[in-house]
Image 1 (tube, rainbow, N blue to C red):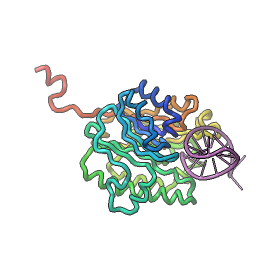
Image 2 (cartoon, rainbow, N blue to C red):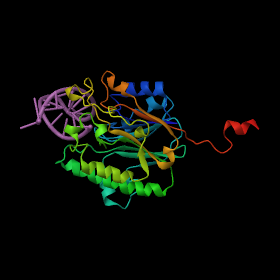
Image 3 (cartoon, rainbow, N blue to C red):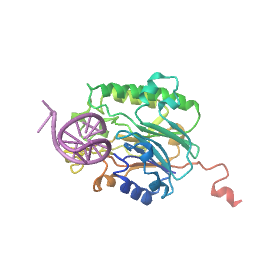
Image 4 (cartoon, rainbow, N blue to C red):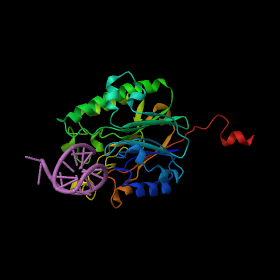
Length: 278
DNA sequence: ATGACTAGCACGGCTAGA
């Protein structure tokens, strides 16, 4: 089973690129961020024509997340308030459409668009830290449901120096500050690990390149789009790759897709070939 | 570098992203 994430920076502007990529790659699941469209205008038919069901949570012009799946989508949960209905903060933070999850083949797929924060002195940065704190409470409730979890999306945080092209200059700034990193690490706890880092230890692998300053042409990127696996799924992961080529498209998103491969559903006892030989 | 690009909204020039 392959599950992907892609911040498309407007699903309508990027529709041809996304459908072409889906047709070529055919992942079972694609999670989108920054769809930038209200639900009634979401281009659902174009994805259904390729065999994908859609679960969407959008708003006009800003934010917006969606889960596309070739396998049946069940038990969709939208916003933090789906799991934290009595938490006033979760309701406030759910006004921006940044959280959607669905059960697919028995897996809970949680698609997130973490706030950017703008700068360390901005009110948006305070919002980002509050959002990450709420995520931690949300995940504690999710864990009680007993479903295996894949949490993926645009985290707008580079967790380590090796995730940034120029850590000497950028460590400590927005998307790389101690407070953001620590808030995300607290939410991850012992349960969730970065799928990409299970297979690649080196720096130089980016998922986002700024549109400005020729960042793409000069290879100055960040790795801020992540796929986190819980301890059950870590054992079953077989690969995690960034489709960097999509950043080289004409009129590209500033983010590239990231794809994880998981041996799911796991083989049952007696499912292996030896058992069939008797 | 208070810079740069890109998208949405709306049709002029903002906001927002990261």
